[in-house]
Length: 140
Image (cartoon, rainbow, N blue to C red; front, top):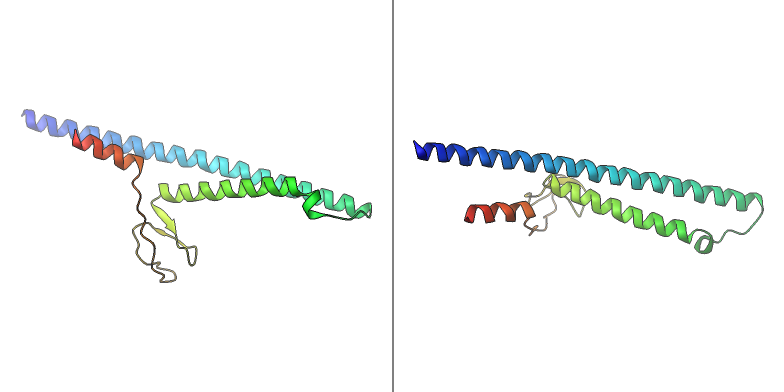
């Protein structure tokens, strides 16, 4: 009887951990998407600022020097765009997806070939923190 209770307890703990992990991943994805949306909004504001400056220079018949006049805005846009891409890749990883390097199609991480273009995929050799935690718990 004690073995049955232990098995039930272990299964309950395992189910709880899986539910907590799933909930945590979902909440993390939501936070990442919020940051991504904020970055996109900031980029839109910078585009408007650049357009406004171009129009003002045009109406005043001033010469437009892209490197000098817009370097600050362009640098910020580049930083925000890089962060958006990093977040996008992290979200793909949380969904157990990857992007084909050839056609940029989102595919399952375990696929060896892209179902869209047929290109052989690079092996992903990473172990998530959750996998490490599970392995450590199983060893105990």
